[in-house]
Length: 122
Image 1 (cartoon, helix red, strand yellow):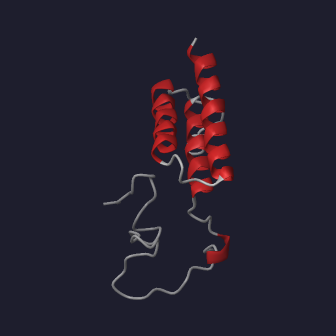
Image 2 (cartoon, rainbow, N blue to C red; image 1 turned 45 degrees about the vertical axis):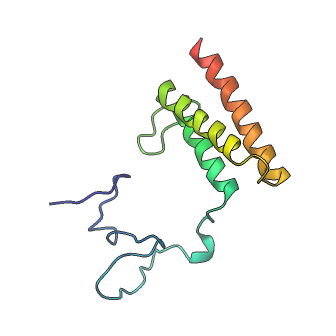
């Protein structure tokens, strides 16, 4: 039996489940894989990357970019609207707590995505 996570990765083949720290959950220490990405090259989890990630996902659902899994351009306006609304909620809940750069990125992303959504939903 093959176990896959929600992204379709084969859990048994790809090193098992990951803990909250991103490290594999294993009963015994494993030697690092030769093709493993060094820790310095991994993307950092910060506000900019999170907003960019939501923006890229929205662009995929708007059909502006191919889906990286299927390499096909698919439109799902309902999911795109959900992600845009998520960004709006983040803006409302973080008001007054963001740096100018973070605020500009969030507002600019929402503006651009809303324009594209409106154009495509006509």
